[in-house]
Length: 276
Ligand SMILES: N[C@@H]1[C@@H](O)[C@H](O)[C@@H](COP(=O)(O)O)O[C@@H]1O
Image (cartoon, rainbow, N blue to C red; front, side):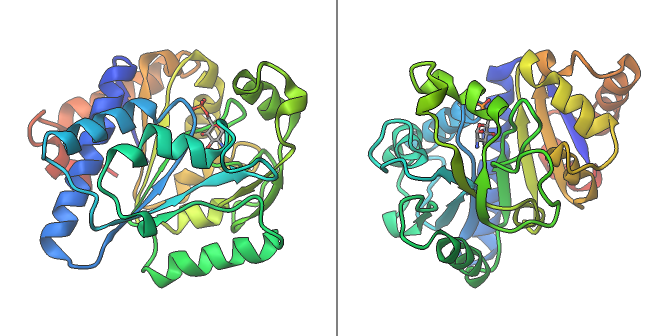
């Protein structure tokens, strides 16, 4: 697993956006089939979305041949609610790029048969050839998508009960009232994320430091579902300095050193395949 430490959130966001743009463009040079991109919500990817939008507006990137699958959605929160992940994605990203509407996939947390919705989502991902790159964020408890501690590391898309810590943290979007935060969500599984050809996870801020420490320095554990990335053959965590405060100095220096030894700034992206 590659751990790339950026000086701050803005640099992190720019780096991740450039990396994704590069992947999409290279894919489009070689294949006619669409690039399949997994996407998260939350504050972590907002800067990346902003940078991707800028690349699109400058004419440097098109999403015309991109299919997206979002990671998760609350159950029983109207799509039009400002805090639904549907609203979030259109507001922060889809409304500003040229992606065809029919290429956007977000789980429907209001449908009659939630289990069917989840199994069909998995089928849909398979039908388009799997996810080329899954972008993710994490919760303070180390969850990826909504795979809370204790989630099976081979889990698939399903209904998940949210724990109190997550609901407390997310209550900032619901007038700081935990009672307004849904108790259930639909989420892709850890196994769904692990099936992606590549996974890139953004970890930003002090509040994520413990989870980063567990995922990088601890063993693989269902209690810190991000740690499953240790078993992925092309996974990268991109974090900022603030998120590294619980890492051992030696670990921090080790990952910095690897990047210094292997990356020339302009050639870094071409060399990334050697760095996992
Ligand atoms: N389900 C989402 C996660 O996918 C996201 O990673 C997390 C972190 O959010 P933030 O980036 O705002 O810290 O929030 C929610 O719990």
